[in-house]
Length: 293
Length: 265
Image (cartoon, rainbow over all chains, first blue to last red; front, side):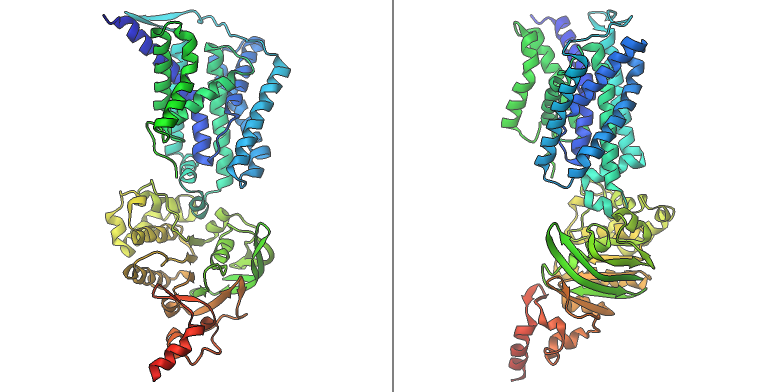
């Protein structure tokens, strides 16, 4: 006999966490799609966003859901600085150099965070942290629900930005063909700068969300970026619908593994690697996408 | 209108152009001919700002442009139809065309009118408006590339090997288009391996070999004479280099005398 309540509950939890995963992965998708760079330091930008949210809450008492915008703006400037001083000089070099550079940045920021803030796991307890919403047979933690809704808003904002605004459409053009973009009068270098900044801002906002539902510690970004790479591979590299699809698959799978496999909550953390390996073997172009040229 | 003076261009440490000079006047059709790897495309890429010069200067309309970025040069009115067409394959034909004007203010305000003009030049693009550019045939893609460049309302339009990889009928079509565009008052700088056809429409030509101009001045070539008569083999620099005629690589300089003499026997 199927226990429908626990099935639905598990599905709902999966969908809620998928929202956060999508917010975590969108910036990675944007940088990969527009610049063709796999940004290994994306997780560390999220970590910085989580810490900025944590400190704004701890020191100034600003609620994480309000400081989200501040984290976003702060990370936008950190992101453009990182691009201008480290990535821009090697944009014309082989992709391997860019990969190694972002990996180096990732290690640098992890260690910087350990020096500055120690390795303690920190949490934010807000007035609404323990509250939950009851919808008949299933119920949600309020914080998870809010992070999910904000993730949806961030995704919609990004899609609108990319399809309706001039700089957003320039990013799409550059992701399709950067030679042609120069030739139609787009400043491709400025577009890269902006794309990296927007991706970092998304990471900052995602980091603020992370600080409300998870522990904040120096390796939190690394942990999340491994999941984000899994999502990228599931969804096909560098496209937004694929990222959303991949987030759902990963979120729901983790949730089901946690519910239905004995001792599952431990296994759930590792399921992303199983998915990653299986998909790379059976369908390396991603379940949803096609390979980028 | 356009003046290149003694430019040197490098790809990394490898020099691609030596002391190249050329000038294009308003309303002209100028052709640069030369074999594969002679540096023809490099000249166009350099004018459009995609490559930088090490020495010399490039002026357009009396203003030095060699230090400007590619997007700034397009805004001044220099557009290029690049080799391999470089479309946005996953956008529709119409979106490709509209993007041509989207980032250039003076073109953006006239985009509807320009689009109508392009549809009148290439009615097929109107029919295919909503089709993805990547799914068109080579010739149609070339039309989109030309249309997109025209959307920027260029004063100088450069073509990099527009006939490359097209069927002979399409090649004729493309050359007819170039003539039409020229008649609309746009100055043309054309790079081609298809010497015979491109010289037919050109006012003047430059010959490039191994990154150097063969002659310091442009030449006024009569293509019929140059390739068919054999009289000018000794003096005509065009015949001194490898070229492609009707898709077949030919070396008139080497073969022409023999072929002509066989004909006359």
